[in-house]
Image (cartoon, rainbow, N blue to C red; front, side):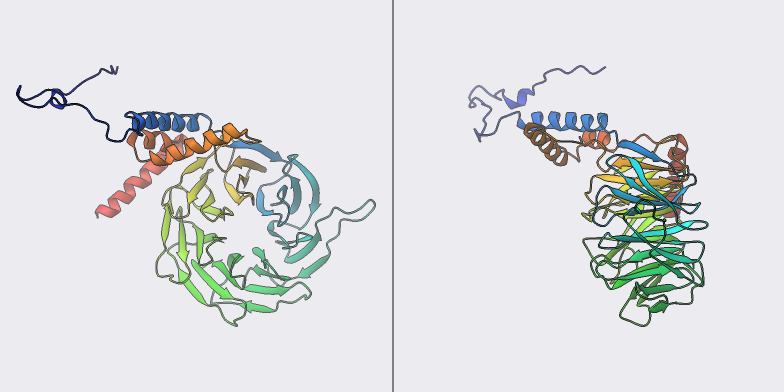
Length: 417
């Protein structure tokens, strides 16, 4: 038990000899309160504790799929719409405000491998295991109308990924090669290969819109320019990357989710080594998505957890998990920077808060002022041991905790060696 007592050091106020001048405690700046720092520290500590008390990130579960959720897509113009495709070829459109499914269609035979919404938001494209690319209207069919695609393109091989250009009617697919398609044509405008037998994902750069990158099965990441006839650059890693995501604010940077439990942020101008290695997962990382501010990204892993990383931090600031959630296959960060959506093996889509302790809804002026003040206090005192310890602590499932410990020991051993 701690007992706090007042203790005074006699050296501060007792004279050494009776001829000395009396020592008087002086406050040289009368505008500063003598206990200001002590008060602020106590407030920062309380704010940090309350943040952990109110950290309840899980909001809702959207169920309705009859097989594992394999891919998701955000609507390009509407915040409350989400599209998801499952392993049985079914595609659902969700209204996130009402938390219900508004439309279901049988898009493909076998897996839905990719969904992407056109930049104008009027239609969307899907690819699947049945070697087809289909374009669908965003509006539900009218009364008596059939649920038919606007356009169907038959490919020669299975498509594994899909992405749309930000400003033009052009989209890219990947499978045995990376193809660039024009929406008006039924054959690819351009095809890229670089001695690779298959690609797992392809992504357009949201800023430099002519650039795109893909992850290949030979452990490489390949960069392309649509205006060139051949690929630009290639970086080969020690293990395969599952997918990648460009930073929406800084055109040069992209982060890839790797099989070796880590994520790597690269600068495309210098692919010799990654800018940052983000470590914390204890199993393969399956998907990654940046926040619209470009300051953070969220990753989904085979270890049944979701983690939020700062773009330049090696370790995650947040980890989300539930008892029922299985391997998380796909992840999206909403365009208003407030929510995270995850799709997992056990047929559910989960909605999370991006900031676990944030109060949702309309805030009164005093509430907002208090929240901002507390935030500044936490930033000011974040390196104090007590504050840091409370802010960093996260409860982890037992198996993940022990695996992380084991990996840490292995890393330390390699470093010593």
